[in-house]
Image (cartoon, rainbow, N blue to C red; front, side, top):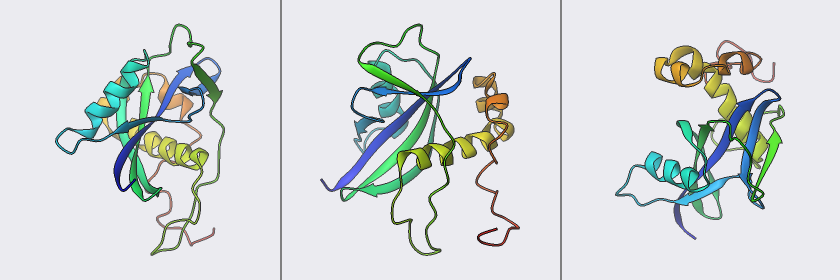
Length: 160
């Protein structure tokens, strides 16, 4: 299908670390986008339908999937009291970033790489954006090992 679509990578923080929660059989929450509406609202609504409470929503990246532009949001939710059997939870693991050329995207982008990119960006936001810092109590410590993006590459030689 040609057009635009939205996806949410839904995360929460618990004693184990950063957890990724998703509906069974899907790594992300997908939502269609009505250009007459704010995409943030569509994402909040799609996540809320799952019984989860968003506390932060931030667009983090986009990519082309099946001839559509897919806009990806990190959605931080309150830790659920219990995870319904219709959901799966996985502890987030570190991943190498997907790298392309200066004028082209990477040949492949895996969801783990999108999550890594998003968490590096969030590491920067939680330090620099007051609203996000206040919304994400406890997250600065969880993100302390992530190199803040988008500025990590400045001053470095490619491949170093």
